Amino acid sequence: MYYITLDLEWNQAYAQKALAVQRRLACRLRGEVIQIGAVKMDSKMNICGSYQIIVKPKYYKKLHRHVSELTGISQEQMDVGTPLPEAAERFRKFCGKDFVFLTWGPDDIPMLKENFNALEGNIIEDDFLKLKLENIFNGQPFVLTGNYPYNISSQIFFKMLDYKDLIPCCTGMIQKEVAERIAAGPGSKTYGILSVLIQAWYKVEYLFTVHEHVFNPPPKVKSAVIRMTRNDTTDLGCNEKLFKQIVKTTFNQRRKTLRNSISPILDKNNPLSAEPIFNKRPEQLSVQEFVELTNKVEDALKA
Image (cartoon, rainbow, N blue to C red):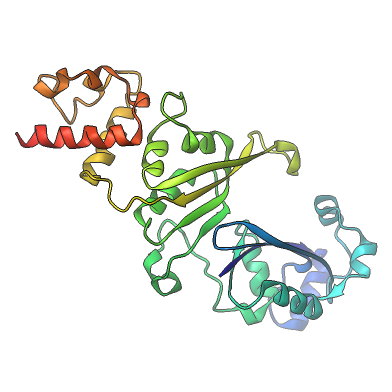
């Protein structure tokens, strides 16, 4: 299966023209596609092709000045563009037979629906955090990728962990600080809850940094593209629920030693807390050391 990351540009009409067109078509057409851009990736998220074409609009033929400023597309380019039916057919051939569409953001969804009626019923528009992922693609594994909303990216990755057996690979763009946190190793100041929980199940690769100036308007933060691929772990070798609890509890007081930070779970007076590992802080422990700690704590709690 191929994954097609799609990015559309569309022309918006001036208000009077838009009303006239929508009355004539008896449907809503907020924008008309004027450029189709896409990157094709294989099942391992390796880029294996790209596609870009300027589309000649049928209805909104005058390029809106804001669209021109934002996209860099000129009226002249649009006037000699390829008609949408032909551009769509070329794009279909580029996609191949076995593929899934991905978009960079929610704005492309209504444009897909309004410009490509044939896709109706094949576009999933929903809140990812509320979706039952086992019902998507008939319960078959799928790659999770996107330009993730920065304010909920951590929640998205926690949900990915809940469905780790369905998601063999996750890739996309997130805030640079979050990407560094996920990829960080023991001993780093950025090493934390996300680092441990994700690295327990996935190999994390920080691919590259995306600087502010490539966006218009430029954001106040840098971004980064990462890739997370399921590792060979099928069982942590410990109580997974307790493992998560220990990781989250100890990192919530990361400046304290484990003896103190783990006290909501294991009393300081428990004989186990005298062991040397409890003199360390949580960021000093590897994933495997957290697994070993979980087993020791579970045994101590049962004693």
